[in-house]
Image (cartoon, rainbow over all chains, first blue to last red):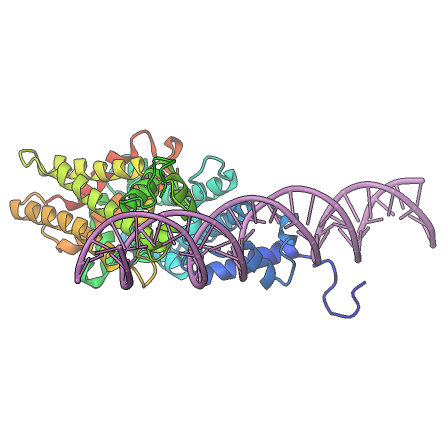
Length: 200
Length: 200
DNA sequence: AATCAAATGTTTCCCCTGTCTACATAGGGC
DNA sequence: GCCCTATGTAGACAGGGGAAACATTTGATT
């Protein structure tokens, strides 16, 4: 028994708390350099405890990446959803929303796209990424049907959009979008160029 | 004296050898996860020796990133240089060359764009990145002068190109460009979309 | 209710890394 | 020939990831 201190021996919900603690760190940090031991420390638990809930550090990272893609999907849907606006407006809103997401959660965003690099990637992460991509695909499809977007292969358009937004996000996080280099408002400016390539 | 083994006490050119060893590791690895001790080991030198040539690990990483940008600039110039071809051809060649570079040196490419994230970035790295960007700017300027490219702000076009190519490269490295998602030839397809947005 | 098995935390190890400090060796200017 | 400095080595330390052994609870079975 542990009547002396308030905390019981068994935490009760450590899995969730570990994830939330790690997410909080990712929100602060520019890179996902946090250590598993520090997560355990902040969760008020010994450094061995996390291994009862995650095979290794990578398993925790995978879960975080999956959550990140779910949040990104929500951000995209939210930016696209009010359909009573021009397609171009919704497109720009979604692109900027994704980039804002990356800027608000730099560590998480970087982590999301780093977790698929090795072959042993968690398929759940891949699926979550696929969901976000699906939202984009459907939007472009609607745009083509309405005649707003050019009638070129959907996957090509989607790849271009995905790459453009991801590229802008990464360059911004990496501090490459300095004003001397790309002007005061590079993001809408660049998205406009792409939009011109999509529009019919 | 060290007459017994062939290696003299002083290496003679350790700085260069450390850089080259690290570059070799970067060429193999998907991420730049190599350790400084391992570099020293492969260079056949004690684990403390590198500190006589680099303030810390970050200093070596910065130098590698700088070399990477110089190589990238060379790749771009090479792809753009024969001017007796249509602008669109040269544009596509340069984009694909950059992405091929990333694919051949995934670790190095990732490192290059990771080194500017923190504020204490080596200004030399930034300058080297700027040089590559300048090559792109000049090409677009030529294109506009010739009337091949639309007459929109240069920095906007350059940002869009830079982000598109970098985004494609990163997505490819991260294994996000699966065929089921983006079709068989996503890179030229996506670059074509962007090109449509640039062309007049 | 008593008991045993599984789940979850803790402690203690091991080996690795980056970095610092003290020491060894070599080469070049005087 | 001698000393200063550049360069390399050896060892120490803190901190991390991970495994193993041990402790504490919970809960299912009887």
